[in-house]
Image 1 (cartoon, rainbow, N blue to C red):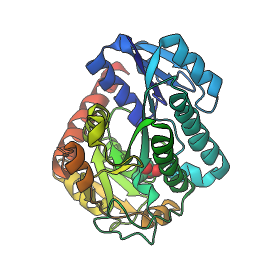
Image 2 (cartoon, protein in one colour):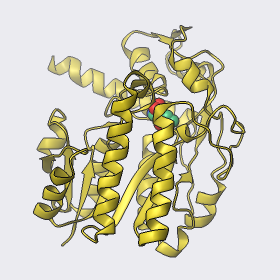
Image 3 (cartoon, rainbow, N blue to C red):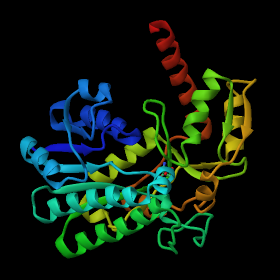
Image 4 (cartoon, helix red, strand yellow):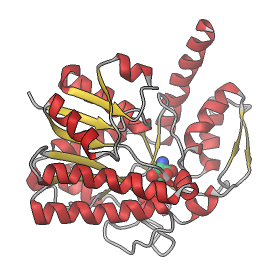
Length: 321
Ligand code: VAH
């Protein structure tokens, strides 16, 4: 029975995507892979392989060993880290995409999911309810790699018939695995700090509105687009995807409804310029029309879930410490 491979399974989205795919398809059909085996939960909960996303032979060997027909390529260097290491970001994000696209072009695998991002938009893009088709002049290396990646995905579909599907993820908020190197990471860190310290210094200013989404919605959208009939996928670059938009001030107020003495402060850093180049809200009507996308979590519901889960997590770790 052909199997699924998640490359970059140890990351914020990859780790939860792996657990969900194992629930849906059975652990024996889902191979998790990453450059190292630091995520012990992942390594101990099913088939795990060390794969270097920039090494074609490393991916090919894993595909052949496990009879893979579908790859979720979740490995990438995100916006903030990409600005510190621009060449490494370009090489990782582009080499890995070409390797996977070429495996499909050569009929070695059949299906690809590749994540894009609202980072494909830039300061000249209409920032409110950003349309599916609009000006895209990204000013970060990460955004450039995602914009170019979208062009290659559409080219490989039109030229070679590759079944590659993609979503422009907004900032993703989750409690299981910490994000790394993103500009939207403040919206994850704040919940941890609220519970542990009852205070947080945001690296984005109070009125910086950004498109965001709870992890459960992001995972459901990913499975929905991959399970949708091919004829419903009208866009082969990448679909706009949206749920909620909020500012650091608004998430702080939502937290205060659960932790009344939470203290929020603001200390914008280099990531403020990145956030300022991105839209504040996204029009995802194409995804809602083409394959029935709908989000389930608003800011209040997400905050309640994050605080409940993290209180359990930190209480558990205290007991075990
Ligand atoms: C980042 N979390 O901050 C990612 C995301 C829209 C932002 O792509 O770089």
